[in-house]
Image (cartoon, rainbow, N blue to C red):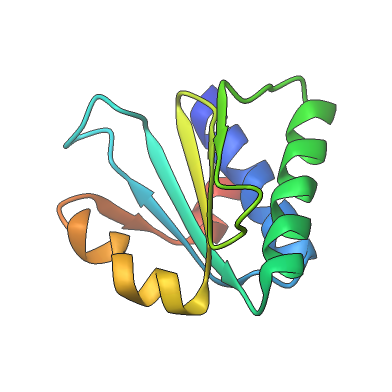
Length: 118
């Protein structure tokens, strides 16, 4: 399994373990040099959004990965964790609908989470 794919799989499992909603993976490697994968999810409230991010950080750290940047943690409306090859976006429901990253990155390849485990 390649490095980016492994990171994406770990992040997705961590989000799902905290009941992350509508976890979406977009392979943007063919359309951007920003990262290989964007992972997008949302939670019911700020506490859940923060818990999801905390779990991603914890699970990624266990695997030896450290984020380079974290934004939005205090407001818990849109938290971003940048692992260079993988960027994790966790939103409140309302903000996810408003920013609609799936539409913005529609040129990327949407990946089934099960494919990350292969």
